[in-house]
Image (cartoon, rainbow, N blue to C red; front, side, top):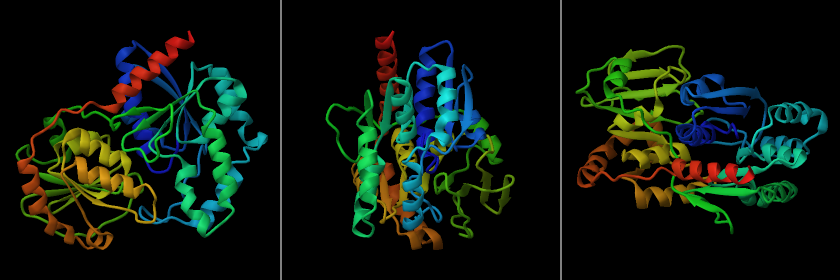
Length: 356
């Protein structure tokens, strides 16, 4: 899976959680740069896994959660898509030794390339692919043309393509899924105990996805705590603000489920979890990222949602949007959602059985 943020790994975990419900045991070989603690926190107990640390993707080289470096991205992707034999031979050997029923890729082209090499079936899980993301960059840098062509060729090789709503480009023959999100464990008492607050308290969750940044909002509300996950060495509290390490072993879906609202970067994983758990969302979009228009439209049509500016997010003036957001939420009925992870699980199990 791509290690561009934590959204792709989150989506894979959501699917594996569902597959594991259908099977007594599940063995998974994982390749990527997503840290070990993430998989330990998110994979079910009947799922045994091997994590192979490997750069499986470049995506966009980020300069923080909201900016990317175009020239550096170009250089790294040009090197990556050559797939030099001396760089991928060890990955190929490990996959061959593991002998999976199929290879699943969440937009990373490496798994598809290995499947082609080993003549193993491949599945692609996506709401966009990198060739589509890179297309606007052609105006500034023509060398993206060869990258786009190479990516299109690789993605066309898959045996099955699953597209997660909101997806960016409909592909003929692909299976469409609802938004894919990790399930909340639903243990409110345990969650609030971990946060160190009483169950009758309320909190707002602030997130920038898997790419951390530090905040200095000050006291936002006397009615709510702020819960902010990030690159913190330990859980600390300052007034009504709670800072959490990302590896604090506190379920992020549980945090979304119980939050009065989520505030932060509008990435696929956060949006899908807010959708699945009917949690209001104040979102900041990356205007330089092509996916943003698709995500914005989905939020406007399907969530209790308001957009905030990046400046408003940084300076804390987003708090002025809370009354109208909460007013919208009070008028909305909770809706039972069908998790796209269940649909993906059913498709993958059916696919695996067809191979047997």
